[in-house]
Image 1 (cartoon, rainbow, N blue to C red):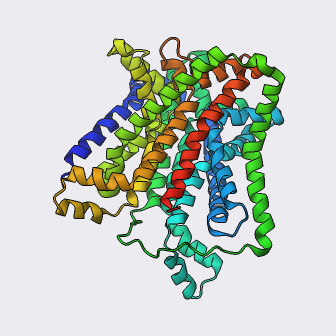
Image 2 (image 1 turned 60 degrees about the vertical axis):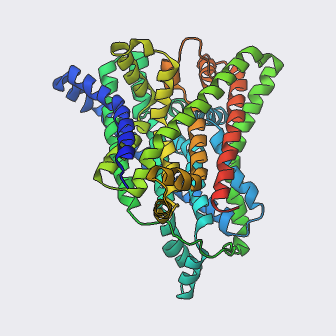
Length: 504
């Protein structure tokens, strides 16, 4: 099967995704080595590097432990109300990270620094790990655990040596997704008063108007992303996770919790209370203080309509352009494919302000008619959320045996028809999950929208941020609530498709 058309399509997307880093390099060349080195090798950059490294080193392991624990409890034990708790583990995706952050700051005004950043980050982003891990647990062949147990291994050894290795692809993909969010997040850390490269970049652009300094920081952030990509690729490996047969058509045996039932219940309850209870109580307080007068239906309706249009169109386009790279990364891995895959991933680690400024520069200097148009804004969304789409598609395609494509071609299907009619149909849950993940991101995206949106654009996130910046928290409450309500159907879709991937 010739991969040339697929490679060409993936290469075009990869080249376009290099625009932001090309912009950073171009600014660096214009700035000159002497000035650039002075901006990079300074104590402030060291402080930001330490903060970012600590944030990643603490948040990701805690998120892995929490997500795997919740997934195991809800999928493989006799936990009472497991379906409800599994929904509560996914629902935090419906709460924007900056709304989560403000809720905690409202509750505990002194919550700042690394501890506050880690706490809110884990609560906001651990569902990105819970979803793929729980889906993978449902798909695992119970015979693997039976074989391990028959060799004399106890429950803990079976889990760590037979089950956990099978979760590696899901854990690596989800961890990478969380890591990219941590590198690019802005609103959460501004409210929590924790300095990262992203907050410093936005501060340089908006406060000091120092473009070269901000772009040099962006260059360091790109290097951090490449390091994260390399680590994920190393840990992921090239193992095969699909099989031809359906295996044992039975559900795995539910482990009895016994005396651990109460601690397991408390883990689920505390996690749900911290990730959902705190933001919803805060929103309820805002809404009660504002009453009916805070609901400007004309403005809210316009912001809601624009947000829905951007989310649907952006999610569809982003998923379509990601399919070639997702297929190549699974079916034809190699050095060149890894490079293209890295291009898809790295741009998701850049803050929206850097991507937006790159597109502003390109459109103003090369394609002025595209400046501040819907096309440019949708392009920014596609670049920012390529990693979300790629992670979901890659994991889903990896579960489709390549032998099915080969059998279809042997029966007369062309390579393109085999992929479209066999692989993509079986990978449909991953496609739906990818679109929902991208839609969630667009619904809550802020910085790129502020800079690139055509005049008159007012999304829910823009309105919420504008009002909170004016300390009008009561007026911002309806927009926060609408963002949550708009995100809930997409979150429900993620949950439903995750269940279907396990045949439930």
